[in-house]
Image (cartoon, rainbow, N blue to C red; front, side, top):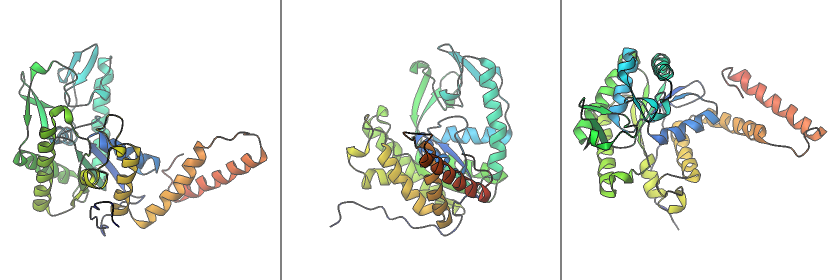
Length: 317
């Protein structure tokens, strides 16, 4: 008896992720969930240097700035609610100190430029097709930073507009890294503040545009069905957080396992199990830390760490 609708996923045979891979993650908050998993398992990864970017135009602007090595100045930031913000970045980059924001932005531009050139895999998670345009400058922003909504116009990007943005993103990326594998996915988080119908329309535009782009790109571009897994395989509110919008830990772990089974090499999966044992050992708290039993446990844990670090010197615990 089948009690679940299964999303068909085929194991990839080329450009698989392993511990030699260098991963860059950009996009919505779901990319943060995946990024935390990659960090836990000690992969070489960088996630959202400018913070969460919800829509394709924000990611496009970010990649363009990174490739152009744009240096941000005072004219690129604003002061609101006693903090300095940048319309091209998430509020997590904001600060009460002007120089701190500018230094963070410019440092991330330069470091991401290097990482993008060396990346083996780029995972882009699109969250919404809705964007806000600052009326004063007619510029689409990455984040409104709680500035009064009357200063913005809200619009839904069409399928063609999103497809064109993805094409621009791809062209920019290939100009500095021809061999990077790009994996697109749509965030399973529903943006219900836009409205139920409006959220469905937005997700539909994103999915249609991604597949339209992939069909045209043909090379080193793929789609992972995180949104579909959440909507079909996990269509039960027990898989949602208390807000009934975000996937909970169980759902994130489930989708992560699907990603691993599809995109990760068998060798990487074996190493991940070894690292998981070490991570759990590090988190373990003994009732008696001075006992001989606990000391033996620590010695065995140290040997396991050493064995992993001999194979992969970049790993630190």
